[in-house]
Length: 252
Ligand code: PXP
Image (tube, rainbow, N blue to C red; front, side, top):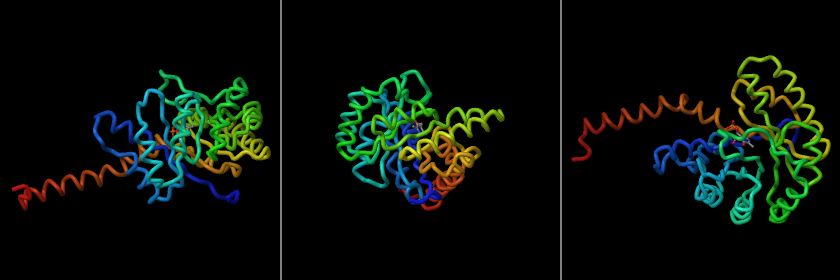
């Protein structure tokens, strides 16, 4: 893969958030994965949280079984999640910090503080040929730590940049420079560089320009845009069904 190519991993957690809000079987994250593929997405990212607030275990097994696109399982570094990863065998796992009370992943993983525990945590996962990614802040200290424990990939946290960008706070320019410097540093060390969190159609261009970044993982903005971009179509189908029933009395 050349430096010009960049993959898009689509995070489908919030399809499950909508489903779980009503306890129905729809919208189905697996169907979302199929549409992601048809639309040219390169991978599926799903975060199995400890509290199962969106994606649940069955979603992960179905996504893996149907193998629509490579599966990147986001998870906390806990014994429970390690067991699931070794059982499901996703293409990659991305380790993220997780707090119960947070709304979404806040901040990157502090790898430098947990070198030996993370090294032993990822060992059996790597042995199963699952690629290991660490979601970290764009800092050389964290990148060095990721490299030293044997991670294959780092995913740079773009949340701070995106917050500033959304507030139109021009300090985002400095943050982009930090992300770019980190991406180049990690690339030179031989790590594959990904990025994600908070990216929108407005902010994604700044990150996409960084040649060393090979993959972006984007969820909330894509699922949000799909509500408006697809809402018209959903209403049209509903109206058509209503009209058809009136005209042809299909249920009599
Ligand atoms: N990458 C990681 C590691 C994440 O934790 C998340 C959020 O689950 C994303 C990417 C996607 O972020 P967003 O939903 O804000 O696009």
